[in-house]
Length: 256
Image (tube, rainbow, N blue to C red; front, side, top):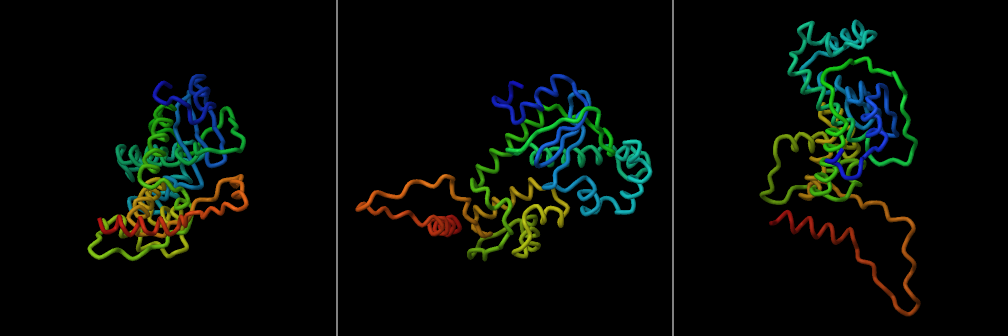
């Protein structure tokens, strides 16, 4: 995997080289492999294909439920949706690939927990279009870098989204307006993604862009551990008010 200098998941790299088939289980999600290629991914942080299709309005919930009931045991839900005329091949492929990359981004997030692989385990959705482990790792790295380039403070990713008033003359696109309208001060980005039927990563990206524009509250990142030593006696050092500095920066950016 020359495209990624340091692998996101060394175990995934090894399994791809082995052309392994089974389920790679991590703290934040699961990747399903067939012959070393990723055919499906799930994460509690990302809406599944069912949410993207049904909440997005492309497929009635009863149509999805019927596909699972009739084809789940055969690991052919995706194929059934196409063969029954509910979706076109291209629609299914695009939606499924989006869901795979979305869930894989969270499943491959840094973790201190164990990583396990269960050989031979498959997913009931079935295979639509396998993706190379290299492509998934490369896209995961690209998405991490994009998020940090937009707003390098990850606390907004898991905190409730709290809208802030726009500055005079400040405009917001339709997609982000809908996100702000659904933000009630209690829902997190992951909950908003499910509510709106959108990929979780793109919701995070919108939230970070809104944070950079000063349109949502920006909680502080957790303090580093261990804490720095106290200043020497007789030489008081005033820590900067980070929250105040961020609010000042937000206000300046909003008026640029």
